[in-house]
Length: 560
Image 1: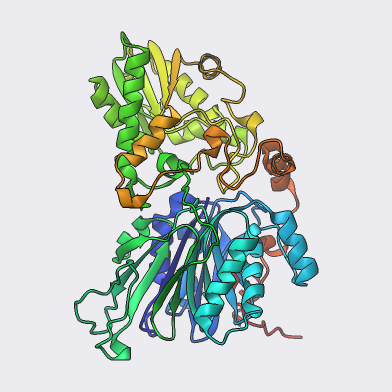
Image 2: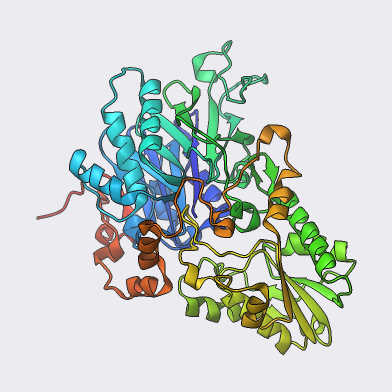
């Protein structure tokens, strides 16, 4: 799971660097492993990427170098490839035009793609990243375009990408000197929204700038220089809100949106031959910020409904329960816990205080790392636990490591009984669309009943949300035009909307690549020169050869 944002401003004298930085900052929850920004300045590309948080990767001198009125930003949470900063995004290829990609999700047919790209297209893949494959497939189709019409060429290339690339993905291409392209996989598994604003440096008059399908249009009565809007695309609507743009809508399943930087016009087309929306339900449960709007639905409102339905199940299962207090496990579960407490007619209390400078434990690699980090991340307010029967509410339970530690902390704080609830159903299957739930054996619900799970994590009883209730929590706050008839629920149900089946060789490969032991082996490998980053900067400063992963994408002039 990653966060991406792209901007194209009408005025080429205004730079996007600060807005990309701000957009990535509000999307930081989607990935804390690495960050990157690329900008285009009158045909010249500038790139900075490195492992670390947004605030640490981009220093003042980096921001000054990131000039241009169009750009992409990316925060990474690795599920494919490695954690080398060479695989931090955006990624770049110089032909044709000079193309950069920022990608969120995971491709499931990487072996076939790698062979096709290498043997048939004779293109070199320099990393194990599936994002590099997504970049090269698009570049190859754009190279082969027969039309002189760039709009047709771009959409035909996206159609080729959707035909070749299987899995769940949303992404953006920056085509140097051409424009910005946003796209979403044929099932709409991974999220993507776009928005516009009136350019603050032009004198566009107030009028309806959108056509009947919700696509921005250029006001025809104004001069060309005054007729352009600013455009933004992002993984979540919070980035659009923060940057002061108006949310237009979600990009549809199988759709591409192309903003021509030469004309300022926006074009849209369904490029998939068969598109059927099935967004990832885990976005609503855990990943998305509560103030986001996804596929027309408020994430906050869905989490309220999750808490309501969870409380109803508790009442059905334990009508004579002796719960004294409801306590959320911060932060994601707070909304659901608040509504559950209201429904149960029990007080809602903040029993855990979170250290906000610790990364999200679900995202952390390695079971021991996750276990140790829980006590650093959370501390108890003992008076809220002492002598009470407490109901702990979490958004989900993945490996059970965090849940076990939290139950122990509650008992250490003096709780008489500890009950545990999950706003999501039991996670029993790997996720293959960009969420790091890779191996069944590492999941606490794998081949365990609820009674066995409660014994494993040390609580008195446990209640999970029913899958039907989870789906209804989202549908009941949606509008009919949102068309949320199907979701990707694979980690709960084992049903994969792209057709994979548990037991396929793909899942064996996934286990070999992504189990905790494999991840630790990767971390022990000797670091590459420059921390794994290729240096392509023409920076003449004395520090240019060790510029912390900054790439200028120009030919470097070196002294001989």
